[in-house]
Image 1: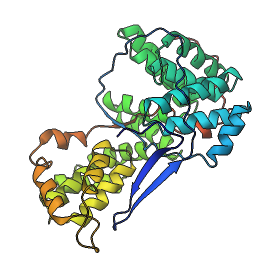
Image 2: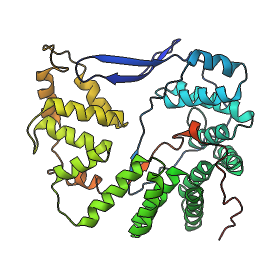
Image 3: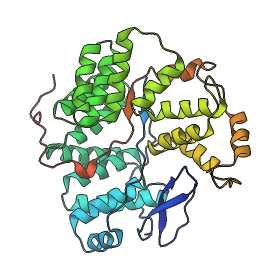
Amino acid sequence: MKYPTCKFFIAALTCNIWGNLAFAAIILQSEPVVKEQGTAEPGTAQRLPSIRISPPKNAVAPDSEDLLRRAQAGETDAMLQLGYAYYMAGTSPQAMANARKWFKAAADSAESRAMLAYGYLLSQGYGGMRDVQQGRELLQRAQEQGLPRATYILSSLEASIPGSKKRAEARRLLERAATAGDVIAQNALGIEYELEGDISTAKHWYVKAINQGSDVALANFSRLERKSTGAKRSSIEKLKDGVADGDGIAMYELAMRYHKGDGLGRDYIEALKLYQKSADRGHKPAQEMVSLIMSRPSSDPKLPFSLSWMATLADRLPGGAEQNQNSTNVFELPRRYEDALSGLINVSTGQVDQNKNLQNK
């Protein structure tokens, strides 16, 4: 979906499944895209045996007009918050460019979280030219100021470079970030141990992440617990387990089952509820399906959708997990975070990395 360049832009769309559409907007004045000098460097996507979970980008600034005014006046914390608001609403290249602009402004004022965020955007080429070297330098500065998340991102950068030495360095940095208390690193380290077959240690790191409120780690831990019981479950029971664990992918798959009547009684209401829950978890196919469903008006005021349109969409859906072995296998894979800046504003600069002085082994 493209958003027009204007004074205001829509940041989030929420669908009321009982018939009403509501729009939530953050009032951020559109700003010109800031072009920065840098070295374009194509990235290499690393294929990992896991599923990446993308949190919904729906952050809303508490008072965005005031936030913009304070940021323009040079208030460092406002610059950081404004950059994060643009980043979380990053549905257009201009929004991401503005996120980069305000992160840079705050980083220039020595804000460690802004250094982390700006370094990350530079290293990935988000919102402008990619500059891995400058991004790495900023991340190292944030690391020196005690932010384990910077160590985690540096680990990811090392892991994207081929070679055994780089893999070893990436693992060392990941363990350092996890030990220092970064929740994303703890979940990622749990995955590493799981893929190596060390389930006990994997569970140890998942629990640490769960204790910090990680739903992704909870889904990983619960999946291992179910495996350890040795109980055989149908694919539908597995999907329901995933839904209970808050797994957005499982919600989407089960919604399709209800939509098609595949192994379950056809239930459009339940299907839409699950599509919406999955969309709220940031699952893009579910977001697209909700938009499709709501694109046709209902002739029945008691229903939030057109029955004939729902039937048409059901005929277009692929077969369920029983017919698609690859779909079933997806739920046996560990879940990773996709957003390295998740929870950035809540990261305390007092959360010191106790492993600063660790030397290479």
